[in-house]
Image (tube, rainbow, N blue to C red; front, side, top):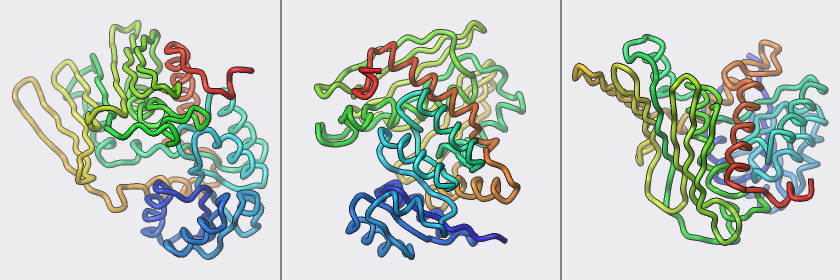
Length: 329
């Protein structure tokens, strides 16, 4: 079994969760951490057992011993940091959203193709047991055709203009931070919509603190979702089908559930609680692809990531949400 040297670009909460997943795998080596702050990189490396730390992203990206970089800087910096790593021959898994917009995402995949290196968006749901079970139920046909989907990802947090969630310069807003989860669920099961209608509540900083969206399809199917920083809505995806409903939830105890409710009264519920919240599954996919000589994942494909960012762009533009870096383009 080949062992891969992993690096973290952007130590923070999500990197801590991802590292807990890496620690469960036998073919990973916690190799290096890179940050703008050497002190921060040193602390993260010490806390989690990484061998090296760097006070710049450039030093991390040019380390000849590094194989794979997990990029977890703010959304606004993904494009720049991904290109830095890709142009130095590093394989990458980059947190969602991949970049500000589709143009930047295409440039990132173009750089990966040019360097013949692996790139994948770090999308959590497709690898989770609850989502795999939901797909199995849908493919079995027991619930029939999907008619409508209704999704929510919402939590209540304090308004802080300095926080990245409310900072337009860091591509803040509920859509790219949490609304992306409902969007990826809808795209996975229904594909890109033919029509999009949005209603956004814009914070004083210029980002969406809440957004509700309707998707319409020529097939007659439909979907809706709501994301917000202002309400305790929780996380759920409801799939309404001809013969019943499928409900996916993330619970406060970090467990995942999928419930099947059939029209004849039959109900079944499956509950899962993977170690490290299931973050290790993304790393497994990266390394299995590399073991097979692949530069793309079939689970989270380049095509899906482009479809996702294209749909996010459509939603933003319909809502009139433009990031500062896009205003002079």
